[in-house]
Length: 57
Image (cartoon, rainbow, N blue to C red; front, side):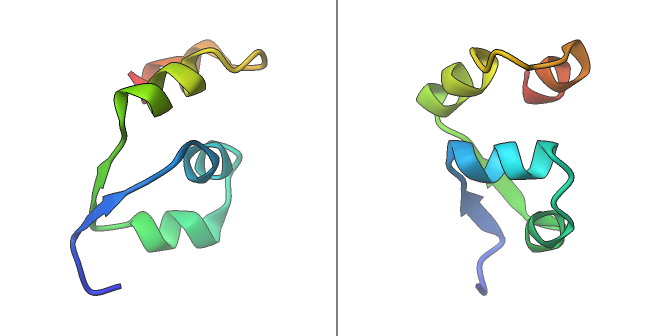
């Protein structure tokens, strides 16, 4: 990956919120884009904590 801009999907963000350090390393220093649909999917996750909800927003 040579670009600074990355488009992620829902699973990537779930891994990141779960503490995946490999994903964190890949996303570090990049501009991460998330679609509106992905945002809705993430915010509807049943086990979402208030802290995670704030991070997503």
